[in-house]
Image (tube, rainbow, N blue to C red; front, side):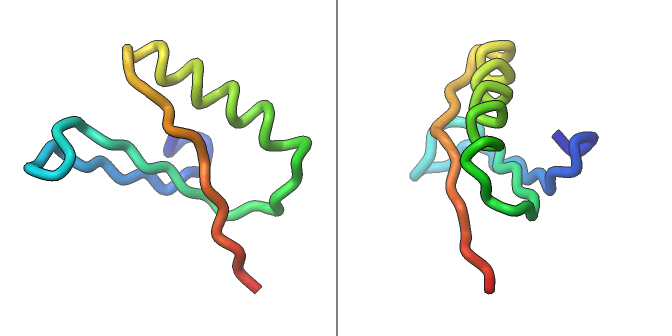
Length: 62
């Protein structure tokens, strides 16, 4: 993900979250046409590592 210009954070399991979490962020113009391929990319990556993709979120910055 870092090679694709994402800022990547890895969180190890703890009492509240019993699994690893990977958070990938990058700044981009939010366009619906870009969301479908990104969603597919994350789903395929999660499947490759027998993981789950919980979707994506968008932070609005003005």
